[in-house]
Structure formats: C-alpha cells, structure tokens
Image (cartoon, rainbow, N blue to C red; front, top):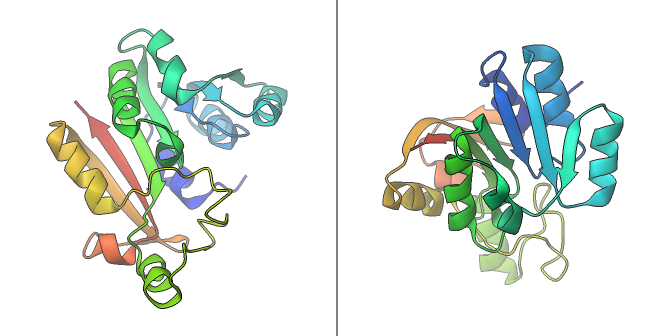
Length: 195
C-alpha cells in the first residue's frame, strides 16, 4: 500500500507497538499501515460516515466524531501518539485541538498544507483569486479549509504554547525538501510535537 507522502513520514516515525489515535483518519490508510507494519494499536476518529465505514471494513477501530468537540472525552496520556493529518486547517479552534492532542497523546504529529507556498502567493498576487492546487483542490466556497495556516504561523503557535518540536519535515510535491525557506518553498509540513 502506498501512503500519501505526509502519512509515509508519520508511519516511518511511529515507534513499534505504540498506541495511536488518528484524528481525522479518513478511510484508515495510515492506521492500517501502522497496524500491519509496526504492530501499532491504532484507534481512529473521523467525521465523515463514509470514511468511518471504509476504515471499519479494513478491520480498524474507528468511531464517528468531531475533533473540535469529541477529543475532550479521551483520558489524559491515553496514547503514545495523537495524529492530525491535513485536518488542523479544517477545525474551528486549531489551537484548542492542538492542546487536546498533546493532552491525549504523549506526542502529536500534525501535518497541514502550507498556505504561504510560492504558488499560493503567486495565485493571489497575479490572479487575485484564492488558489486551487493539487493539495488545495477545492474552490474557496466549497473548501473544508477554514483557517489558512502557514509554516511560520504554526511555528509561532508552537513557540507561544511552549511546545517542543521533536521533528519537522517539509514536502515540495511528493518529495522532502530542506527547512531552509520552508515557508516559501514547501507545499506541506509535518511536525512531531511534545509538551
């Protein structure tokens, strides 16, 4: 099974036999890979019923729920990792969701599209319209993205919260790129955080 590049980075960096909560797990592709490759005890929370059904059909433990409201129901430090991939920008309160992730998990992986990527900037500058890209394929009026986060915005939030960055990976297309000028050159970011 080939994982999306950000999910492959996460899968490569989750310790064998860990307990994982994948928030916004989609169809469970990452959870299945973690279970099959690393013997991980993976649980999932997903808002879309069709994705919950797809994940459950893979034999995964996934419940339907909303990251903005349902994370409060999980006990403190009940997972080794809490994962939020391409979901942060769709939540009503990303800062509160991040706090919940790090309350529930000893560490948290967070991945998101970078709205400061040069193609996004060029689209706004030259076209005057919200961009439509491979990673941001919806028009402004039907996108689930309600917060347009950049790598520098996220770094500032992490610093303000006093969190530790244990790892950071940046993607341009489907390939990893350096952290140099990541806010301008990376289309996607993956962070591993802890309190």
